[in-house]
Length: 208
Image (cartoon, rainbow, N blue to C red; front, side):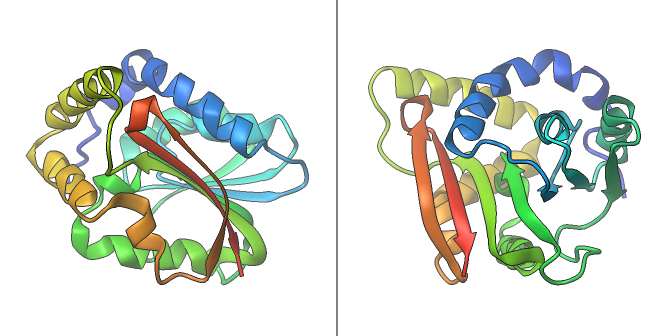
């Protein structure tokens, strides 16, 4: 299978990460990293999010489908994280392995037909009483004019990522984003924040 990030991985941190930096600041303000936890990031990309948990002495795992992105993550994290190439629909972890499972701007990239299964897998590998920290695009009203300006920037990146990627983004919004995906899962909402003038949704959830 071809790697859609083959060309982008080497410059991802230079061109895409600056846009994600502000989002990450809100995410970790809402749910600050704790110490002594087992942490999994689904769609770990170049490993920047896991760097924040590294500073707290946690056991870190990252899963990504892209070999090129994982290569960048391994160079950044060296031997402090267990990084695997794998399909989030069939995660190579036992039930209730992790205290924290996170996914940042990952689920909207996935085809409609696998999203429910991926969310179920994320819940499966989370310990009872553990937490899921999810960030993705939001379906709903935008604040004018900033919300629409942000939306134009988002559309640029989503279209540039390719036809399949853009299609998945559109179906994600049509299906009401994260709340609809989580509706049937055994999780309780603890904290949430809407940022980027209505474009982004951050959810901190506890597994029942």
